[in-house]
View 1 (cartoon, helix red, strand yellow):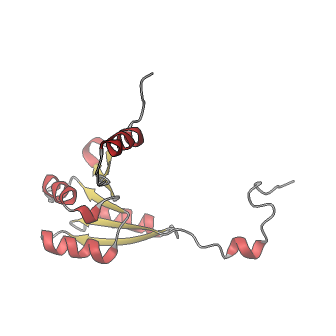
View 2 (cartoon, rainbow, N blue to C red):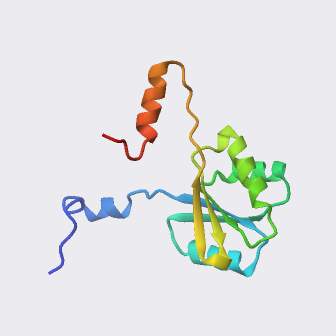
Length: 142
């Protein structure tokens, strides 16, 4: 006998079918290689993802593209001709780009780096520093 998960058992079917899902916006930036096209096709099959592919031409166009598409994640391919160091420094420089994750594919070593762009916080008094330290500390010592 199949049973529903507890969090859905009291929810009418119509309500579950019409519950809005969160759409994650993904920007794939590269040279439009076969790898990038393949990743785009695979990810495009997921209804929770909105995929945009683009070539990097210059900083201004890249910033305009980010402002227009408002991605949650930017995917970069290390094997492309992109200057990844420049792009990452560029992304770190602009405060409007906080809370974006960057995924870098390293195809030669089968490694993926995930970089969360920093969250910027205004600190006005010493208590703000303590709060910030407590929020960002992964493993406080006893």
